[in-house]
Length: 167
Image (cartoon, rainbow, N blue to C red; front, side, top):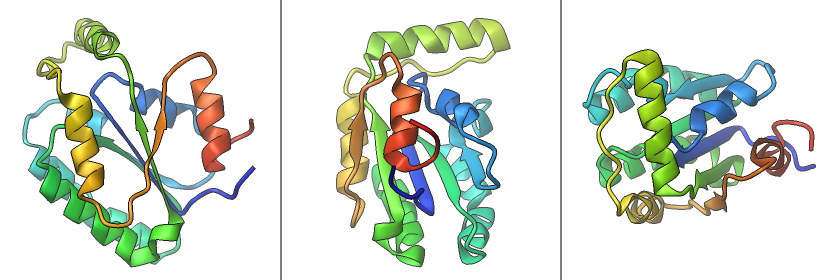
C-alpha cells in the first residue's frame, strides 16, 4: 500500500458518495473538510469555498494531513485556482486527486433520499455534470486525477489506492 498523501481531494457530483467515503476513513488525526455537508443549506459555492480556507492552509503549514471533499457546484476557474494554491503550498506530488464517476440517476436518487431524511433541498444535477467536473481538474495545474467508479467495495479500494486505510 502506498503512503497516504498530505492532501487528498475527493470530488464528484452531489450524492455520489464523497461524504460516505469521509465518514469511512480511519480517525487518524487528519483534518477532514466536507464541502457538501458544510454548504448544504445554501447555494453560494464561492462563499462556502472560502469559509474554511484559513483552516485548510494552516493545517498544511503545520504538516497536518488533509482530506477535502470538493462539491461540483462552483465556478471551475475559481475552484481550480484554490486547488492550485493548495498544491503549490506543499508540492503537487503530495496531492492525490480522485473523483467519482457515478451514474447521474443514482446521484439524483441519493439527493432525493437525503432531502427526505434531513429536510434539505438541493438543485437538480445537470446532465453535463461529469464534463463540468473534468473542466475543474483540467484547469488545475499539476492535477493528475484518478477516476473511481462507485461499486461494491469502492471505499476499501479507494482507501488502499490512497493509503488512507487497509485494503
